[in-house]
Image (cartoon, rainbow, N blue to C red):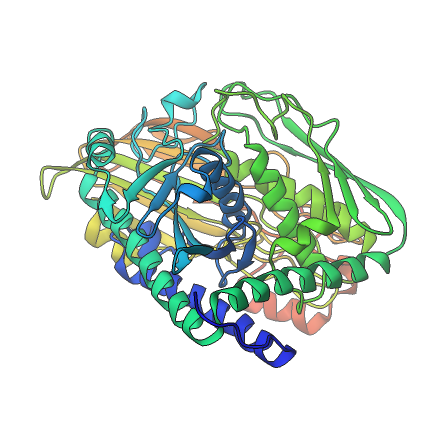
Length: 558
């Protein structure tokens, strides 16, 4: 074991920056090594460093919805493989939604890091895989009624043991996914990225000692806890309530699904009670319990100062209650593949409640749904199976400080778009349109961000199509007199004509047929009639709003 230098504030600051830089290098290695467009282009991937007890310490700018999930997935791995039995070269893997996970395409790997024989930390990373088997290509069946239809479940297991690959597990995976070459390209990228993290951590150990690293990580967590509690203690003691709805669960198309939260601002914590949230549903809209925790962490961070680091110290300031058997805490084996819609609605209700408590820090509702689109079939150019998947959002909500951002990743998502050229090179798909949706941002003193129009033309003879969307019935809300953002729209253009499809849809598409997705805009902030005339004129000149859209009251027509 290496010696431990004295840990003063100077060294602690250096170590904090070094740990963050370490996670950034893990992330960059992963993104540059991955095979799938979902990772290398959309960057639907996250990584973090954890204490030897599994507490989050540091992470780069990644997907907010992944970070808390990794904490609970690591906890499940350590329950299956206690840390006393781990050795250098071990790599743990899981995607089980009912053991801390998210949904089956999100697969996490964890690598223990040692100082000699002593375990000092874990490096972890998680990515969204394009396909993990199941009843449809892309593993996002919107008609699923149980987990087993959604793909291959990987309970906590060892992918590598003392540096030796688990060949039996790899054979099992290879037999159950549609594109093994892409899958294992991404899996190897994850393993290589964690190896990079281990090597960089060992350099820090040489400089600061293993005990020094462990002490620094605990200190960083304690600092976050102290800062968060200080800000919460300054909030007004009160109770705030908020509710919102999702269109349907993909099965019962006429039944909205509600999420409700009661926020109590207490002296020493924020308490979130989700009593009143609807029961678990038949379709894949259910969200594992870990996702509610993850989302609440993200929302609380949005309401706190920017100098508070996202780590496990935040847990000391938050209390969460989610009744069992609800859409946010379902019983196994309820399907969960569309949980990203649900957690974004959780974000909407939690941010809505927090906006009542700290209105100066939060704004109107954002788009509220990362629309997921997948196609699968035979590529006529190669004769091989193809699976395409991508996810994107829409408009950000306006705030009292300015307009919402247009066409951006919102809520617990932080993924990039996949460039049109990349899609058309790799897949038998033509992108006919990719543009901002006029008149989609909610009007107000400050306008909500604009949604996106994305139009696909299928070039394969026949393919499956799956759309995971929302906000077709319940638009993103404005704030303080601002108008709502525009709803989403989903259409398929066939030889017989154009037809609307539900916001959760599974079906077939033929050569020459098109899918048109219009994502929601963000809500506006403040009364529309108080908008600066120059800003309004610029919106009209730039095509962001069109003549005749505003009524005399400033409300949206239609």
